[in-house]
Length: 181
Image (cartoon, rainbow, N blue to C red):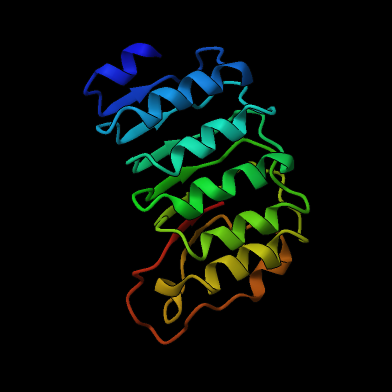
């Protein structure tokens, strides 16, 4: 990862490269020290673990606009580590968390962070979200300042509880967040 700190890489694709939690501190150092990195794809690895927190802390000072973390074996216990990265990164616009297992009590914290983030597209498909996760998802969308008058775009919405959210039915154009379930 030392090369990442001295290069002017804007897009880094590390999809399915067998990275594990022990890689996170090295990735974090590279992210912190590369001001040109805009897109990071870490999908298809196994980043769940105690050092995942280091990676998310580095995200808070980066200029990354797109982060792909799909299929990383992330669980509900990863949500508290995702929160600072989402809440404190002023440039993050796209976040893909699909193919993980984020359903659980800490999912609420993740959705609360969404309300103060700059994220415009959040992908959560295949996350084993249950009906009990849906009110937190709806709250995260509903309380996001740039979606207060318009509803988000949904694709393949999950459980029956989610059907109760109506972010705005006054036929205004959608300028809010895109949620892919």
